[in-house]
Amino acid sequence: MPLLLGDTAPDFTASTTEGAIKFHEWLGDSWAILFSHPADYTPVCTTELGVVAKMKGEFERRNIKVIGLSVDSLEDHHGWIADINETQHADVHFPIIADLDRNIANMYGMIHPKETNNFTVRSVFVIDPFKKIRLTFTYPASTGRNFDEILRVVDAMQLTDSFNVATPVNWSYGQDCIIPPTLTAKSEMEKAFPKGWTEHKPYLRTTPQPNI
Image 1: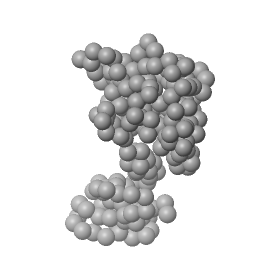
Image 2: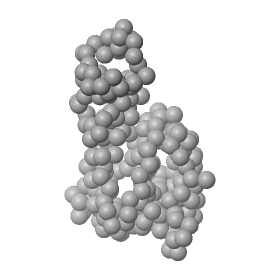
Image 3: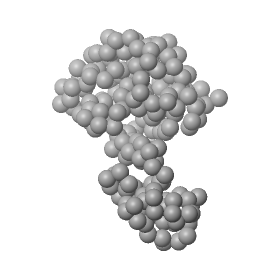
């Protein structure tokens, strides 16, 4: 069965470029972005890992740990990191899993059953501090992932975890949020949304982002 949103992210032990880890223990009370690569020394992924390294401060600000995976060896990973640092002017210091036996890739459904070369698909899993899968993306090999978009969604999830709001289309941090239609009592709304709200329709009400 494929992993679904809300499922507990499978735990595993792995060798990585930053040492051996037990995934749930390594995650602790942080969020995680687990993302896979078809292979080392691939051009699109080289640009991605460079950007992830440069966004270190953005991940830390959101309590996110990032971890990569491919089915190549640690030796290959370290050689590739040297190339990434050189070509992308980066400093990669997040772990990259060496999944030589493809155990983790298969556990997370990262290898298409009809794929003959066992390359992992370019998957992204966002996992919350309760070890629940909150978001999945799968990208084609030719299209680079947009980590700004991944962070935008994490911002939305962290906001809606803390406040009784939803986020509208193309929402970004600082913009108005949506009040759920289930909240109808005016006294409750005044308490929850002291900045007020705008009623566009009885089922569509917006309020300023509550935590800024």
